[in-house]
Length: 66
Image 1: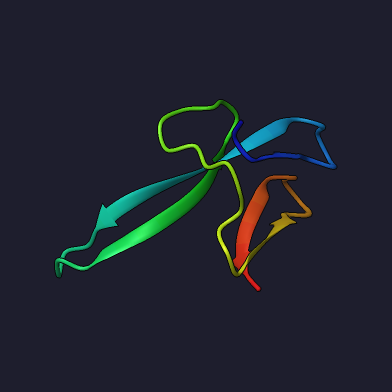
Image 2 (image 1 turned 90 degrees about the vertical axis):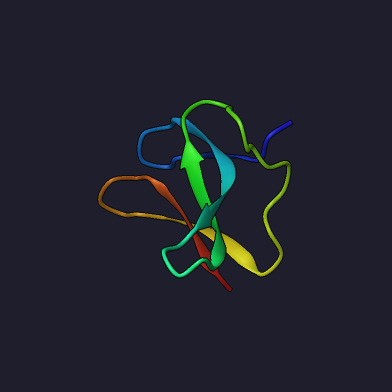
């Protein structure tokens, strides 16, 4: 089951995903993002060293390094 967070502002459920992105210089980075539906790249748990916070204005969840 994908890791999910419920927005305190809207009550909508968001699911955590990740994607490997190659930058122009050839370096690869992992991007983490929340989506309203479960799709390709859904994660079962939070990555180590990260915490979930919420944007106070929009209610969208954010992933931050702890």
